[in-house]
Length: 503
Image 1 (cartoon, helix red, strand yellow):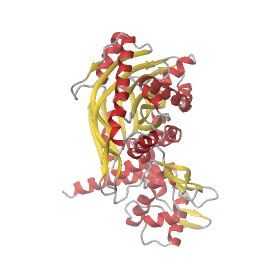
Image 2 (cartoon, one colour):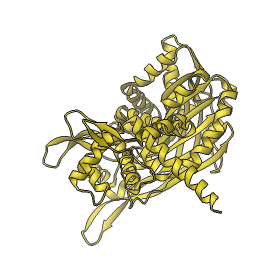
Image 3 (tube, helix red, strand yellow):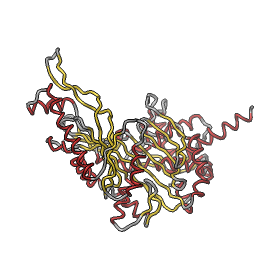
Image 4 (tube, rainbow, N blue to C red):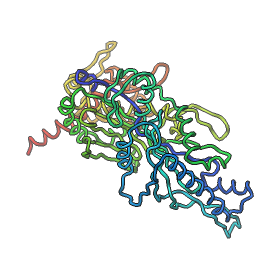
């Protein structure tokens, strides 16, 4: 990454790692109304006896919570108000008890939950369960696991017992490294110092999903014992996930000198189409999702955040010494990747499709989220340090002779040229690349032969590269840098200056 190269003398280390992870657990077969209806029929239970069927499970979960509290000498604390932050309560408890493994605290609260109610359809004369949204008592079991660090398990006391489990990737990494004899200095949920950043990155890349799966099953069996009454185990899916790139500076003064410029640049230069590009998405005209940016001041530093629907990318200075770039999503199917897709006729094929929400999607998701952070950092590097980019801009504006044939340079004040350059830098092409036909869809009015000449011109100037034995092209690092730089210089510097000169 150019940003890291530029400030390498001021940086003590760089680490890419999962941060906040929230996993949802559902019981297959009963996690939806029709499934629970079928389950009751299979067990010979009347649909209108569903409340009586579910009530004993509620008591079993409550008794289990009381037993766990008693065994650990803890009183369950009921949270009556919404504005009370559970994390603050846990921070206070940990300061008093220490951070050794074991149960930390148990909180309870009345919160909304999915549920079912019996229903008889007078038209079809069928009796079944309908999905409803209700409220029930939830328990939050906070504990420090020797492998996962601080976790919580949120357990509802009413069927269908949808669990929520939290842990942090940095804590997992720290525990793994300790077992290998490597010591770290943690700063909240970040590694400030370590015996080896290279080893830390290798362990982060080797994230053991199978072990996480085993842990989740263990937590479910212990904190939600009603699972033993069903013929299914929990299915785990990703509810929310964050992937962080931490750039650890040697001194706070070093980061402070550049951070103000970074935030100002990001706020004023990042446009919706850039956000889509960072996230490898297409910004279609019909896109209706929430999109925008936000600047806020946090206790530990300032934060700049850009969002597109359920996904966001943000930058903040953690405790004034760590520059963190973090991509967060509440719906991982927002992203696509090449995977095996099963068709209705039973056949399969490899194609670009939405990433599945299951736990094991963390594998391919790592590369996707890392790439988003990298694109954002490279964008900032190109804008904050334009000197190198300007020289490259001058180069691509010149005519190139190849095989006695001239290929004219690109002019950022030519309407045709800017249209071509904006097309190839589109977010939809960032991950998947583009072909003649896909570029033709962006450049309306161009024929196939005209697009071929455009591709040849772009390729000759080094702005795009061709994938061997295919008809697919990708933007080169040079292409990304000079196009971004050219468009920004034009829109942010040259045109405003020209406008001011006429005032």
